[in-house]
Length: 249
Image (cartoon, rainbow, N blue to C red):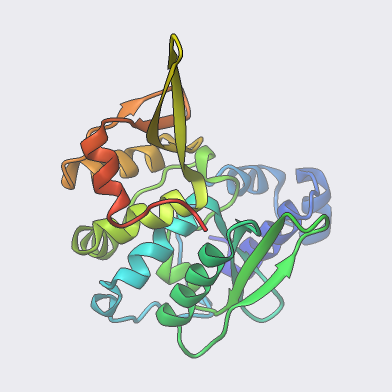
């Protein structure tokens, strides 16, 4: 079995845009192995040599802050390897500074020994909110090679307990990153009626299923509005979501 350092080095090169042949020449890792890693096929997530032992008391993460951050990570987050540690990054729209602040607060609450940092992307429309910790792969075991919609996404049992304890916070994190609240307008003659709606859009079927299952727990009716989108349109359900989400700011 290849050790974690080789795997993480390959991940960094994949993220840098190198092809499998280039990575093989650079690291001496067989091209077939690189291909497996690129598509999320890996036998072990924490072999000997992992910088974090994985010896966590996961019960302490059954909090609303973790549930919210988990939703934000699944929506628009990723984990990468730096020279000495891992970096959790969540990409956010700068048009919603309160959302950016809430995600930063959640990071600080989940891992209080570090502080979140912000990097504004060229053009100023998006910001990468990040935090460094060697423990992120343990706290977000959904981390892997490639995009989330290209590999299975399943919650660990302790993550499921956090979501079950704080379903509102989990949905809030998902909507803040990959969802929206908007107003639809219906014209009938000279009358225009306005209806608030919620929408959640993601390419991963597993992540959409987690969103839908959590809505079910809260008794919120949802429908599929396309291959990527889940819609909440009934007035009572919109009012229920407004109790803990509301318009982004």
